[in-house]
Image (tube, rainbow over all chains, first blue to last red; front, side, top):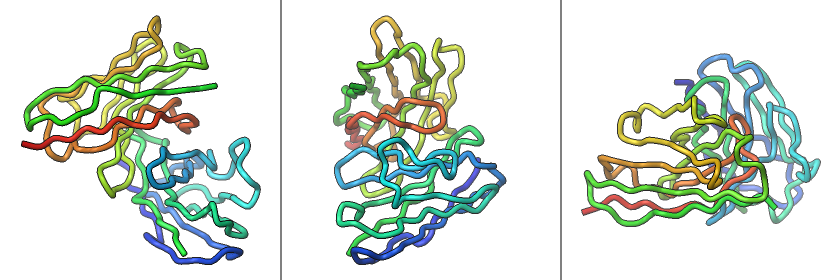
Length: 106
Length: 116
């Protein structure tokens, strides 16, 4: 199975900050990488698919980059509603695997 | 509006069985891969199983293979997960999610607790 690591595991930030989360795959996954946001008690929400494509309706302050084994997820200017957990997911190989998540708070 | 609604969760003893259901609406169910993804309390997401449009392809994570069976009824627009030989580490919120790669739509989840 492809292992996904994420860093940091938690992050304290402030409104207006630029934040970046990294995700690393144990094998080359090309660009088969998605990013999800999850708020407490809610289902995950797709933000970025295929490493860098912004899902319809998602604000442009969210972006993704990378290919192969190393990926970045950036929020250019944090908004109050962005404080949540973020998960990366590879779907290059079965089983699709998620990173352990990054919890973002104040 | 796309909706996925899970049901069937509950408290079950170790070694027991449970059948989860996911009712779909608002889209052509028979046109999409569907998956089960779970999340243990306070933990990350774990993909469990998925199935293609006509049920001819099914995939499982190693930890559930041989114990869980994914199935679907396109006429009823429903997805199922038969879970046998349940263990404590199967305790989680189980989501159904549409799609093979990116999951654009998720249900609200149904909680499975395995405990004596």
